Image (cartoon, rainbow over all chains, first blue to last red; front, top):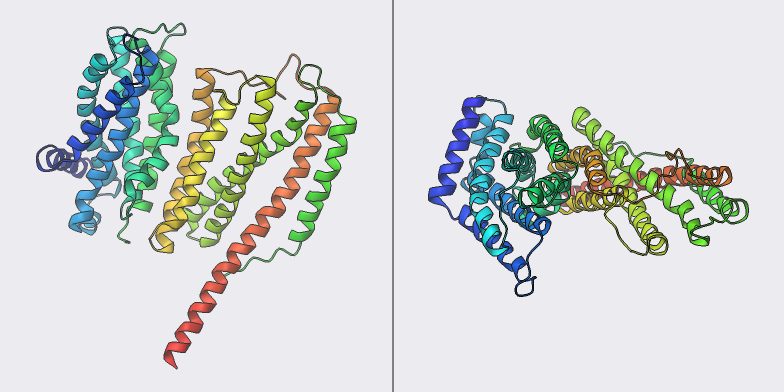
Length: 225
Length: 232
């Protein structure tokens, strides 16, 4: 299972980085979001740390939707879904491979969004760095687990981006709340109760949706059109 | 195909409506007026049952979605759909009554509160669940997709509640409160209203499930008629 998952993740990352405009689109959308939100402030006014964290994670969420649409579209447009299903590995390996690819691509996008947030929204990500990094990994894992499961579900639809956004965003609310709380602290907001509880919460979210993805993926990724 | 027949559905609906009407006597004549909030607090007796039965509807969607995937019986999917429709209706009404109450009680239409946020997030998710019906795919594929979303959506409910509670809360604790809480008369009225709404909810669920069964049955009959027409 891991061999197929790794091979698929590598293939999707390579295709997205070198052969398609999928990541560029996601990056541009995220950057546009950060820039447009900066317009909501009056001249000389500083965006609060919590607002900046919210904008950063919203940009990441939109990026996630586009990334998972792109990685699932490769097999769909080439008519190769059946080929994947016939591979001698559990169907869940496809989910895991796509999730790993999505994780890498969203993480790479965030390497651009983070400096953009610092520049356009005048933030200094210099506090609680270890916790911030841990949250980045945990939140990206949750985005990948849920994005990979629901990305498969929206395939074959004319308006798959809007359908995926409609399903994913409400489900992501708890994860985004925890990520925003920790990143507000990273950008300098006081965190009187600490950020450890939010890290634990994000871990629980990941565990639930990794389990759900592993169990449910085989029901929605079938040969049926 | 099984077309469900629940002969006691009209009786359940009538009994539910009768009990709901009777509960208004308890609300306005028996339960005292709340000291701080005044008469606007009476909205609570409709708001609470709507919230509870909305949540129960979503739990029914979750259970039926699991059953649909496990047993591959489309009847469970139709029950889940019926429950989701009623859940969305009840949650919409719950949000509307909550906002009216919140405006008078807290001075704001909306606040980031665990219960409010959970209700709103559930509303968004289950509206999306209902939109899945319009997917341009086969009924079998739609059934699988809906069942998966029905399971994932309910898994998210406790997470939304917990995260919103960690974020901030000003919602009153009603039954769980150790200090304060409800007067005995208020509690009795609230319990009666909730049970009355439960009877009405069950009647609605069975009624809608029967409608969905019959719609499918009619579709199949029409299909057969068309097939016969083509042969002749």
